[in-house]
Amino acid sequence: MEPTRDYTIESLDTGLRLMQLFLTHDSLTVSEAAGRLSVGRSTAHRVLSTLEGRGFTIRDSSGRGWSAGPELVRLGRPAGFDAAVRERLGPVLDDAVRRTGETVRSAALVGDRIIVTDGRESPHPVRVVLETGRTHPAHGTAGGRMLLSRMTTDQVCALYPQERLPEANPRTPVSRSALLAELADIRACGYALSRGESAPGMHTVAVPLAGSSWRDGLALTACAPADRGDDAALVRRAGELRLSAALLGPAPAGRPSAHEA
Image (cartoon, rainbow, N blue to C red; front, side):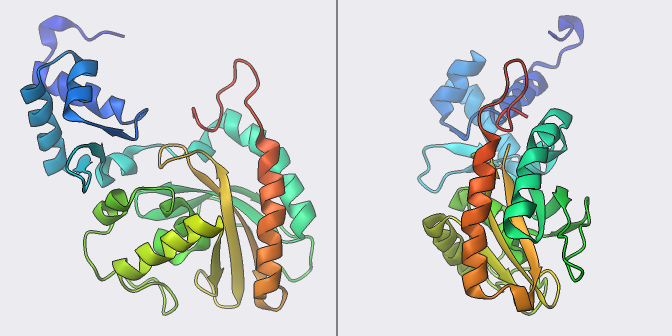
């Protein structure tokens, strides 16, 4: 719906429209922003710089483009809470708990925290309890690091502006440099591991479930007691989770996909 022109503050309107662009574009140059907003380059640059000052945009390290900043990331609604997406993820979670035999969860990134959006509990008498809606520091969990690995290095650095990271527990990365190195490893192998970080005695593996960026990303995790979660078991479950995640497939006609949620 177009705003009522008599009451529109042009500079604010331009800023809001620019923020909307970052909901569909991973990065924009000044020229691209100016063209899409039908404003001059100098206006686009001023608006981008103003948003940067409030944490809504960040400059790429190359200096040629701009990306969504941490404040805009925090405003984004996690894809996993969309009703249509939750319906489509149900069979994926059912398949994942059947394949792994362990508690499985879908999780989304909200700023520098991860939130559990849905899941299924293991049938084992001794199992990890599902706690939907609970949040954890993203850098201290397998699912969180999986989703952080889908962000650019510049976005991760904007989310964690200090070299020393908040201490989630003694096993988590304590420096941004260590976190960035681990995220590079996760990108290379395609899964993330956590051994006793979220809770003592709980081992977790995470793979990508949906989405390609911070806007729509979800992680699929399997959590098990340590005695059923050695390294070999975690790697095997990563493969099982990938098979389950592949069931998501394309969205039905007329329904939003996890990428569009």
